[in-house]
Image 1 (cartoon, rainbow, N blue to C red):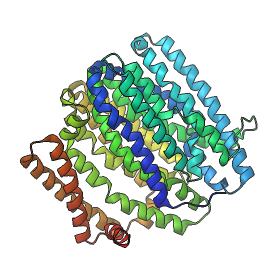
Image 2: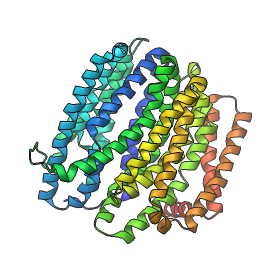
Image 3: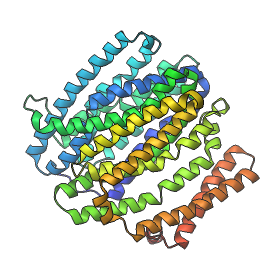
Amino acid sequence: MKKNKSLGLNAFLNGLKSVLNLLFPLVTFPYVSRVLSVDGMGIYNFSYTYVNYFLLLAGLGISTYAIREGAKYRDNKNAINSFSSEMFSINLVSTVLAYILLILSLVIFKNLNNYVSCILIFSLQILFTTLGTEWVYTIYEDYAYITIRSILFKIISIIFLFIFVRNSGDYLVYAGITVLAGVGSNILNFFHARTFVQIRITKKIRWKYHLKPILIIFASALAVNIYVSSDTTILGLLKSDYAVGIYGVSVKIYTIVQSLLSAILTVTIPRLAMLWGKNRKKEYLSLLSNLIKSFSILVLPATVGLAMLSKEVVLIIAGKKYLPAVNSLVIICWAIIFSIFSWIFSQCILIPLKREGKVLKNTIITSLVNVVLNFIFIPFMSYDGTSLSTVLAELMVMVMNGYACKDILVNVLSKENLKSILSSIIGCLGIVLICFLCKMGISNLWIRTIFSIVLSVGIYGAILVFLKNDIALEYLSKLQHK
């Protein structure tokens, strides 16, 4: 049985995996955004978003639930085998149901005819995500295998992209390559998972025990998906494929930064669930406090830096024809702060403490408000309105989730946490100054961007050290030691 692994190593491996997942769009998107038409990208983005609803249904909240519960069983071979077989069997049932509803929707809604081919290609994600059983690797905090696998399939996919995507009508080929890059290797995951557990299809499922918490988590995930994905869906219905294509650029960039930060957070979730599940509350609170303190100095500079370099990032990643996405990106990037801390409150506190009912309530309210905001803002603000509605929704759910776990937060929030936030704010003023001076003094796009990033990191770190930020001093000490 595998022992607890270093959170630092796990964070590095999962971060590397996320970087690889993000590297694919970073390498490919500048190419495809220039080769494919804006309308073609609009069809691609709409189809991807549409399939996500059914992907969510197939997932049914099982991954989150399996990580929370499985962390308690991982040292008992028989218990974890039985539990994993139940989870996989439930997942198969939900996957079949998702495919049935997807096919019915394509038959019933004739206005989807233009998207059918692209939707069917993306629907392959549903089956391969179920087979992937990545929750097994998360339970055992083992990221090495899936990281190596990601490297291989990302390289293959990038090669295929440059070979087969050559003209403006190749968005279907791009969709297929995206599926290959994301989930194409998940069949390998299923067989490799046998090194940890023996998964079998079983009829002996404790439906009464599992179904309620799974459905509550699923409903919460669905509500989150609605207020995340409804922007693109409603924008496509009220405006055009062009508007969706423009908005897709700002969302893509926003998601890249958000995902990179959340990768660090993801590796902590099973450890927190295990500590609370085994009643090791002192260790749980200590780890949670360090997590909040660390993110307080990471999230704000990432957001400020992205806002200051939004034009440069859009030009580098997408090109001049996507410049209308700059304002949208400046608006939506502030949702990074709210979404990360909302996720900490929900996934690291409320879910391990089995308060998924509060998460469900908060996300349902937020999703309904977000849909309303979309219908209000989109008619006169178009894709900028979708960005604004996302920011307001993320702020709202962060506040509500924070209030729902205030009894835990009062035990982990300290003067050091507040000091970290204050020093981060002061450090961000240095980032603003550096980016402004680089914009004034450097005309070349690439040189300006590189200098802005490098100097911003330097000035931000220097300010944190000068203000004696605990986290910054700790990392500086480790660096000097090495």
